[in-house]
Length: 371
Ligand code: V47
Image (tube, rainbow, N blue to C red; front, side, top):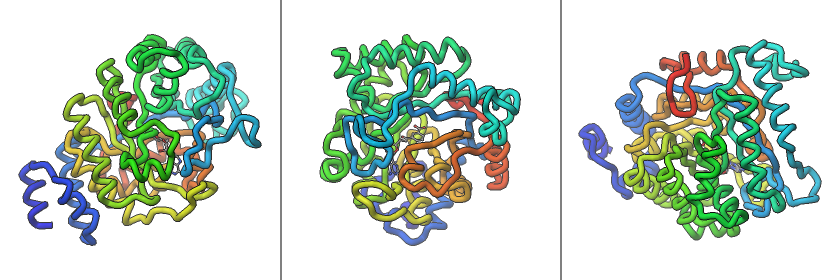
């Protein structure tokens, strides 16, 4: 630990072996301090949150990843698909309640959210067997037409590659078309774990690791900022987590297009692989090691939906500088047994950050402060 400490304090890069050593160490207080030091160098005492809303247009998916409790096959009980009008209506309900404190037909949201509206909508969903590419383009244009100031963070690399296949366009042309129709940024989902053996065990039908990295590289070349994730706490080893981080660090060295990294804690309920929840210690270690390895990422997000409200607060002392947002309604983690709530108000997020001794900064999709 002393050698690694000296290395980090002198600003040197961690090797794969050193990062595995950090995961294996029981000295989580030293690890936390080092990660906190690295986070302060990047973001001072600031911790970010955002007024956002999640929309999952469909849970119908041609892939059936074994860790996913959200997806359904077409015709299966519980399968759903939203029309564009329904998406707009859902945004209006949420937005109205943010602005007025009482959204139209929305006492449900109004009791929880009061303020000036969302900065961002986060859209991800299943790979629908019948929707044409034009449906996604129309979805984006229609959202922007109704909510010109709303930033759209949409579609994982997996969805983008699927759209490229159904449209017959290259990945670059697919992304360019989406951008023209108002896509602002992309979330980091679908990365799971890059190790081919584990990936084949978890999600054999899914876009390969190389495919995921290629879509992200292409997005960055097309001028689209993205996030990156890692699903951990299922069957993978520490070495496989570190391999995942190293591949992201390598791509970020080349493109600089990633904004935030989000470790996603595996939730086991209603999934094919089952298993158990990650421990709090493992969650904090993963945040801290990510902060230390990904020295070229500006932000590490402790996604409160997956970590829980209190642990995400603690993660701010272990290298995280972002806890995500108001969310409103979360389906993916809640299908798999999330122990957190569904929504938080901006005030709750602000307080959570303040009580960790950090300075809350409300941000937009590009990490610009919202006043
Ligand atoms: O890609 C699916 C994961 C992801 C489970 O970029 C699961 O700002 C845990 O990517 N247990 C979607 N995780 C969510 C995601 C995300 C969330 C918040 C912010 C951002 C961002 C991105 O959820 C999927 C998959 O990796 N997931 N099932 C599960 N049982």
